[in-house]
Length: 106
Ligand SMILES: [Zn+2]
Image (cartoon, rainbow, N blue to C red; front, top):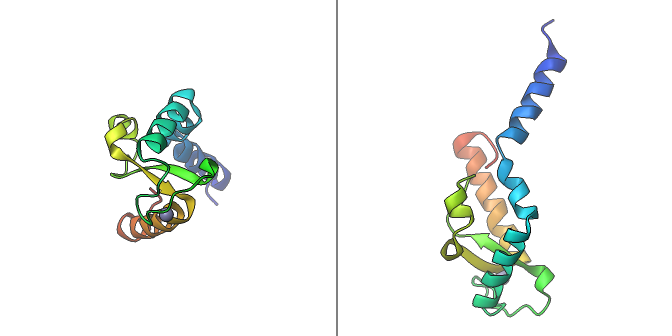
């Protein structure tokens, strides 16, 4: 029996190491950028054109998936305001497509 537990640990380490950008969402810089995008788009979802008064239900979404590319991630012109409903729909479709074409998340 090969070293199964070691493999599991290695896989999980690699998964986290491959996505350092997850931490970027927790920075003050991102909070400020997100807010600029929401204000710029007048708190209106670009997809369903609904104005959402509750900003906790608005998402600054990357138009071109950044996939860890710092330039795309912080590019204000690559961001759009989406409501949570639209964002979750897009994201789910995206992840399904990603899994089908690449066999991995993101
Ligand atoms: Zn929407």
